[in-house]
Image (cartoon, rainbow, N blue to C red; front, top):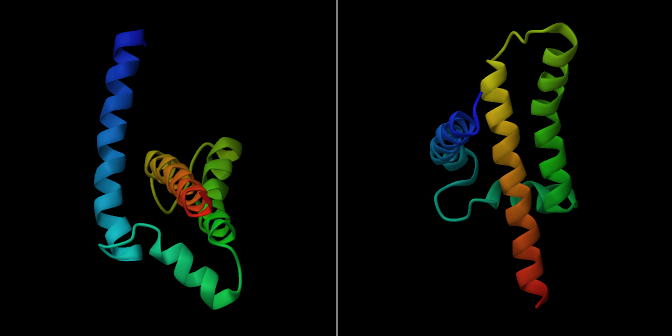
Length: 104
């Protein structure tokens, strides 16, 4: 894959991640606060939102590791799982940014 092909590949995946966030994200967190589901569960369980993030993300990471070990996953395409992991990385970055903003 050339550098230009890789750039186009990343751009295409970026568009898929944005679409994923608009559908699944709205279902999980609602339309107002993209991080609401992490905060809501953290409040309910007496944990930090980042800890809830870790639990949710680990489900997708487990599937990625199954793919790495076995060469396939059954429930959802590996591409979908990887896009989920990338989206969850953005969500953690947002949780961190929001926390830093509240400190300053």
